[in-house]
Image (cartoon, rainbow, N blue to C red; front, side, top):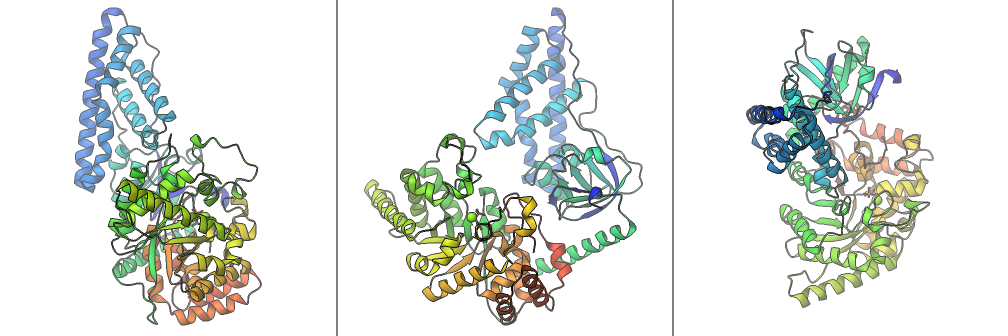
Length: 600
Ligand code: PEP
Ligand code: MG
């Protein structure tokens, strides 16, 4: 059974059933050809004709994209068009033809490899992401020079929609299809943010990427079930498996319709308890999704992206601009900006830290910030500046001691003075909150609640450190669960402590996005949850189905449980009268790389 299942990343939801069509869209073999001196100009002419043809092909694709999915998405073709117009790049290819008497194919390949190597080493994340554009261009120009069609022409004679399998899915290939001919896309490479993934979502065609080694396992004509919601492909499915997949898809669509219906309704339970639903932001690109999914503020704004893949620390101005942008989009709503959570698996290369034997128990998060006060103060000043524009607040990760909060407050006071001295507009106070994500913080939560302005529960790390189970270790995935009675008790203590101290408490770990776990959190008393934006609609719908009084009774029973299995059973039984559990399964989002592996 498992042998027939390929696992990847679900990048466009939905189920597709049909025959596979394997498409090989790879760099063609280029002949080792040199040309005579008197053929050089002809070769350069050939290059220009090919470039002009590819450019007009890309412009055609862009027009088709504009018609089918709109002008914004169609812009993905601009990067390749601009490269073809880059005179430095083109004259570099010409020089190789002139000086080394290379044929046009060989010269173009050399130059593209040179740019690719340069970008691969670049500190700029943006340039590294654009390597796929170079590949796209390289394949097209080389194919044209070799007399092949610029993009493969895909014809099928299966008489029903196919599931296209490729190594790398290009936007050009994606666009050739519509739902009438293609049921789904699968590729060995790529992630959610790949251009082709964005296109597949816009076209409404299910898609799974990152199926490492997948091409070797499937041949054109093989029957497959592709699940773009969960990120899997089932080879050679039985009739029952196909029936089950279709039923799953029907449930997903029915659920989707319900989610759309409640999109603009408040997250208020059957017994009139309203819950605040906020968004977690890892990257600026998620800002639109947070707004579109009706986040009521940002419950966790991760700032590590500002450092990763960079050659130097970001300036105060750069950070302030980003924080201000977010705060303005969420006028009147809180934006909890988390100070750098460096260490563990994330350290920018320029930090040059010696490797640690236990990085997750090492120089991490608030420890790094307090040991690097200049870096920390720069970030604090950026938050203070954003607070002039709205409700920006500062949140500290991996706190284990009261002194860490006190020391941060000193830096906040110094930051305010500094900005005033420089004449930069600044807030005169800044709420400082503590993430409860270590057992030490959970056990000291009363003292931390006195010291802090708000608390936010980081269930990913709290589970990892309480259970001594690495959150990223797939082998331990079944043991990583916030439904362990030890974690559940800490969850309760934290919520109660916030209430006793009169300080707001929210949850920003992954568990809040799992419907069953959210039900438990609401039963334990939490009234603010922050999750990845795509998880918001399902949560809103869930809250509106349930009765908080009943969730509270379930949570009480859960607190007396002695085993994870008992906890899970009690929650399932508690949710079942309100919600069909199979619906929740159908609406489950694919796990992100960052997320914990917890499966409710
Ligand atoms: C957590 O630990 O739950 C959390 C939200 O922080 P991160 O996932 O960024 O460690
Ligand atoms: Mg954490």
